[in-house]
Image (cartoon, rainbow, N blue to C red):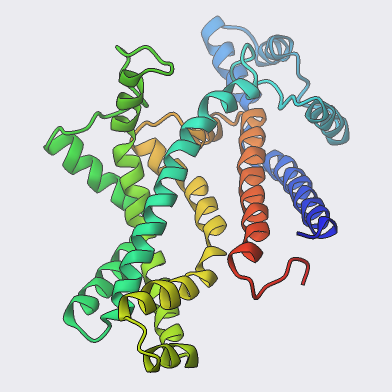
Length: 332
């Protein structure tokens, strides 16, 4: 692979991350609401002091001046980023944003990556079957099913699955990433408990995204089956199972691989709905809680990590696509 091409794409990825961080930094500070104003009002009521005195105490407590010029805030923020410091929570000054990310990111990546792999392979297999048997009623039913499931919002699925499997049947826990009676670590009970608690979040992601993969695969598969090399393979007497697996499936899935990073970023993005519903301690849940508290430090740190993860996923997919499709050369 061309080293110049890799460096060029890496530079574009880093530039995109930098632009995303600037947008997040500016837009978050344009949002209505002020955590210091809200806490100063609460402190003023609870201690029966003036609002000005409450604001002074809040500023001293957080060691942060809300009236500091934006350029100075940006210089302090990016100076910290160069040292790997995402900042300190405004709502909880004793905890850094790095602590939030270190705890939440593995859980989000666990359910998102597992759901992405399951939905991709199930969708590809289902779409290939739908394309191969496209004239039967089974294919029509599966097409309708995939269309409906891919059109329903993720929070609807999350709510329905919670209602059925948690409240009605009681098969799965209501919240958490693992049982509190289990010791976290590299041991079998913790692994089993973590997988058990992740079933519903993963299943929700799979239901939402599998239909899209299947419909794309069906469309791509039907297009490939109309190519001349497929007719030539039939004329040469190649078994249908070989044509299906080596000719149709392999070529039909190539355009779909480029959507992997997009679907992954979607899972990370709308993960807040899923994680909030199941009270799962991932990035989305922390972002939603920080938004409600107007904790700008945590919000911009989480958004930066989400953007960076999505951009790096696109970068990796783009690098490996030329390996999957020999017709494409890196750097073209």
